[in-house]
Length: 325
Image 1 (cartoon, helix red, strand yellow):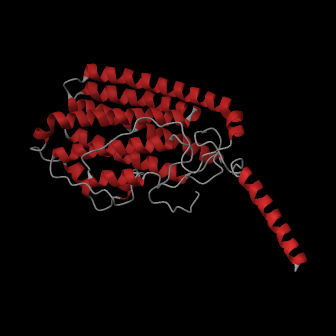
Image 2: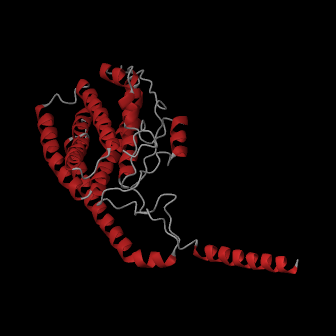
Image 3: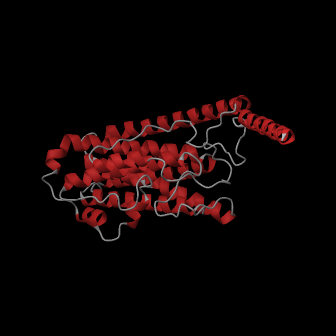
């Protein structure tokens, strides 16, 4: 009996020592597949984060569709599940993290300067011509998605980076912006030759600038597009607040009715990566409803562009969560 008790005591002591050792080292273990979510330069070797990152925010927007909140630019923090508590590792990576934060700050500063410069030009030329301004905005706003798809197809052809979700979502975004453009054309926003000339030539140079920027830094290109979409949201929101009562008295364009209430809304759901499919079905009774939904579309574009700034974070709303491609 004493021998058995002695062996049990020894086993318990060894187990306690092992447990203590694991407890001390639990904070220092780093998952082998951990990667910095802000890094955009190397091909991803991990599955994208689940698209259920923001379920509460999506529900809030469903309950009050009139109140659309656009978040400011992304914070340079890890997403849930990627936190590393090890102090020594933080010290080792502090210099690289500091450099990356500095690069992000420079990228965003350049983007904000470019966006503000274009806004000042538009304010000067279109301070009292709303539909013409919207026509120019929508001509410009869809260009980045063409550029993103062009570069992604090139990368795919070389076998460097293959993500079908990105191509699907960006095509759906361009489809949405195209219908915004068609709405503005039906409202007479493209009636002046000068407006068409200006919009088309800005779009031409903007395309090649975005291709170069996206090849250099996808994060920077997505942030720039976020700035453009954020300005579009603010422009439509200001217009709705100022002209809301008049807009309610005018009929909705036929192209808007077909797009927002048509039978096949797959692509309409596809660009809204922060929502579950079929969770948003607009009503279109008048011109006011049209502009409210265009404004909400711009808010959804902002969320998607924000998500894209974290490498590998974008998921198609229709994708199988277990599908890594």
